[in-house]
Image (cartoon, rainbow, N blue to C red; front, top):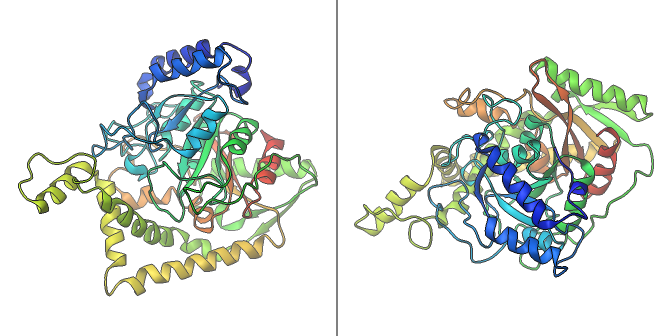
Amino acid sequence: MVMISDFLGTSAVENVKKALSAARENESFNALISLSETRALERAQKVDAGEITGRLAGVPFIAKDNFLTLGDTTTVASDFLKNFEAPIQATAIEKLETEGAICIGKANLDAFAHGGSTENSAFGPTKNAHDETRVAGGSSGGSAVVVALGIVPFALGTDTGGSIRQPASFNGVVGVKPTYGTVSRFGVVAMASSTDTIGVLSSTVDDAELVMDIMSGRDSRDMTTLPDFFAPKQESQTKRVAVIKEFMSDAVNPEVRKATEVYVEALKAQGVEVGEVSLPMLAYALPTYYIVVPAEISSNLARYDGVRYGARSPEASSLDEVYGLSREAGFMAENKRRIIIGSYVLSSGYFDAYYLKAQKARTLLINEFNKAFESYDFLIGPVAPDPAFKIGENSDDPVKMYMADIMTVPASLAGLPAVSIPAGATSEGLPVGVQIIGQRQSDAELLAFAKRSV
């Protein structure tokens, strides 16, 4: 893996050429959908000429392919948008480019970010950086792999229910999901608007901290953004942390549980006060998430109808067929599954029984987190119950696939910041991550704390 500092003070053109070469050398992992060679080299030349400056001048990076970027397609790994060229650029990309960063390509993902393995892509699955027979995790699997392979020092991802943290854990890199509203979602294809967050995957916490500092802040084009509260901090005092009891059950892979226990013991050795907390509402977090999120997905995906933009079925001979056949061809099975679930829970007669009840359960979960943070600064547990599974292993069992998110969706439902940091490896050499969760807008303190062990 490489760091941002490896690219500072050197030729931007050489940096970009080196990253592009590394991307091509690692094509077998299928981590990238496209490369932006022409635009990247043009920007690199301007950096070398002193026309573009900033804290990331000449540093190459990769964006998940649900970020709108100029000079390239934004496919969301779907057949619907395979040839879509964005007329605008995402705010997060603009902020990074203002500081001199250079986007060299777009990373593979589960189509429309629906999935936890990057197998649900119209461009084929991405392979784990440590074992090509294993999944990369998802939906930001491509972004995690390009960092783990050392192609770029950081990559952008989106995290709706664990889509940054889980692939970060599976590939042994740092993954940051910020407080909801920290980074503008303008120019990023929407999945579930109440939990979507923009974050970063990197090889070090320091690099993630720098990128988050640049991307965060208010954006008039996204009314959910918060005033700029993120500012890198030094840890000012010994923190109180608690292990989440429900995340350390016998259902968790023993080696994953052991990695968390070793990490906690290391914290104790450093003088950190460590306790245990029980959050009973965690038992309902996953079913709550898979009611609320599909409901929002069904609404957000209604715009893909074969009329306004995206692919249109050539077989359609009526307006109804334009809608039906275009959506049939453009969406993958997982997209359709979530649309159907979401439409069902929002339908007349079922709204109160499912959607409204799930929102009440979400509030109870938030209240439990708030109560825990009255006694502790951070909560700790594994990122996922198991290390990366085999490609195809869970493809025929959606529920088993959803269970991989059981430890990441709670923080997403509550809008809390969380970070996945490497915590060693299993006996099979597969990386394992530890998740640290903070209270709302404690992002800077959370990353300062995470630095002590990375």
